[in-house]
Length: 308
Image (cartoon, rainbow, N blue to C red):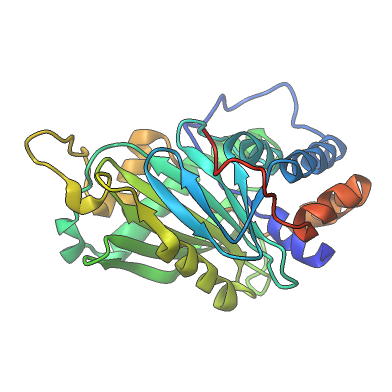
């Protein structure tokens, strides 16, 4: 189980408008590991276990399978910050994790209420151009990573080129990334992005995995994406041209980075950080049964169906 958790927690996503690019001094490894352990402990008291229908704000419901746990917004934000993220509180909905022996992944759920996303540009996008935009976004986010004591990130290429299903209004794409200067044969992190478009905006279900685990882990992303259903009146097909807001960007922007730059949502995965994995393992040992029980305990029966 420690091996699984180390693979999960050594990954992180950059959310929100980059904060100040400077601070007095980066936090110490000891303080990072202590806060991470405390964050997981706090999550263990509120996580909802499947099978259960989890309400995702006022927009949709997620059929959470057995062996999966939903961490509400506040506790999810604390975990992400402890992993080195700048978190956009307005868009974050929660996290999903698993308690299986091979569940070395984490899924970040966000909802972006920017209006109806037109999808007609999916017919004309160019994967090479989209990749360049993502690389530019990473270079910008690296300024914040340096200031906060984390390694710079480098995007290598596609794990999966963008794929859009016009019938279900689902988008999937994935990048291969690493730390700058990291050997090419080192374990790489994978950011497996899935989106579900709705009437008022879209859900992003972002699965974090590694190059060694993605072949099996990507089925989790597709399972959760398929289990997300918009509420009646909030579906993509419920759109009314006479009354509803249309987003200032189209589907291509969700991949190409135009929306990320506009909204300050550099939703890009970091590389697998081996030195931090070792530190985090020590932190989990300090946390003791609190973290282990989070992955092993029975689903709560008295919990609310998701964050407010």
